[in-house]
Length: 393
Image (cartoon, rainbow, N blue to C red; front, side, top):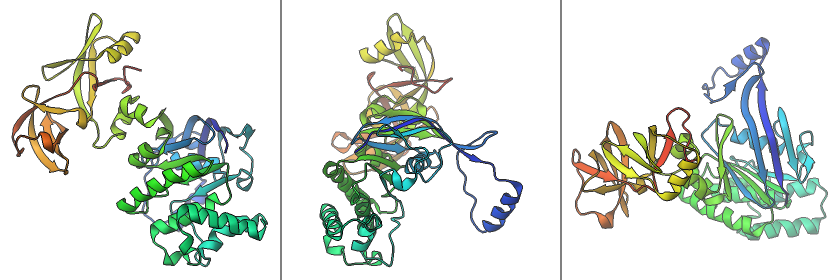
């Protein structure tokens, strides 16, 4: 149970000297080259830049973003596994930059489980408590309580090799929670599991956070995990925070084009369009079709004194509807998804996805069919062509 503050945190990996480069090149000659989206400066390679975040006690924060965006590096700096190049890490009012990892009262669950193969489940879970010289009866009580919470009591005498991926991940989580840490860090703990097991484990983590009084920081590249688990989501790109908000806030009000395209499945449709201001009203115009924006969007645009201009218009597939009139498009692909059909159409040279509920379908859609689509003014997102920012904010 702890509040966590990250104040202008920065991580820079210094340049490797010529000698070290030769050694590393020889050592890693057989390894495939890994491309990462990092910024190169005079200081070195910047992995995280200007990261500021206040996490409340018992809050569940999810860091999400594409590979190489700096989310795992940020988590490792909180854990003490990476040195902080700049800024301050504060846990419960105490600056932790130079505090050893073992003294931060933090537990971490890794992507690859990191269990000791020669130990039983019981021994794996008890190991950290033994290192702290906890009494045997107290160790036994805590291990069995954690096993009960995670439903792994029947596996306590097994070794990791005799467990499935989901069971191993439960053991890894159990090993972390027996310590009753102030902060629980989780680095993509479900990425090695298949889709069905991921769904089950997501539900288990939701139940777990309701049973233990701990602050969570969770890293993932999976937006579904972010949306279902987080009280708030931190969306990162190239070492910078793009937006912080509740799942509903980032879905309904994306701060920029990147967030709009990253959050939501299928991805948001984007169009080259025009924003037109007529007095105190705003319209978006696309392929000759004019749609008036609703009162809330209009009020925000008026507050920012936004003028008529070319824009990138964003509309989510679930908010795009087939109609008798509207923007013309040709059908490319029709994907049956059970309760709905994902209709891929071509409009003005762009691939557009329209979600059509199967109950509303009057006929099948075939390749080359001409259709029209429209959308309401309350679901249209308007982004600046120059800055990619949402013009409402």
